[in-house]
Length: 100
Figure 1 (cartoon, rainbow, N blue to C red):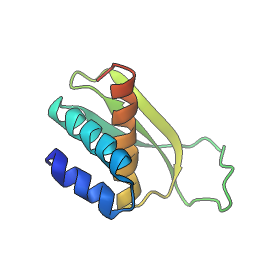
Figure 2: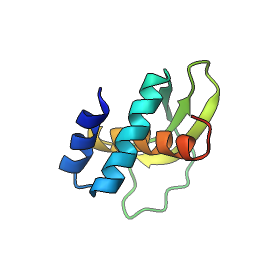
Figure 3: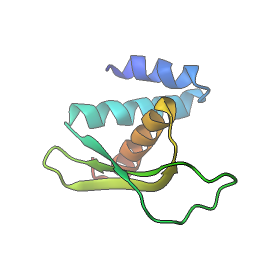
């Protein structure tokens, strides 16, 4: 997916221009670099939200050789939009840390 298309996606979902651009750019760079996002079941019972989710996941961003770049855990019942946001946010974290 192109960076402009990703930017439009994040804008349509309510992100301000600068945030949408940062997410779109990071997502695009991660895809171009061949990064992969692994979604894994999270069995830890550490939920502190208002409602207990039916399922919890973790998402791990790895580079094209499988090396760890970033992760987020205890993600409850993510929908398609939140999955994409988490993936873009992990890419941005890796990019900001100089790992991407």
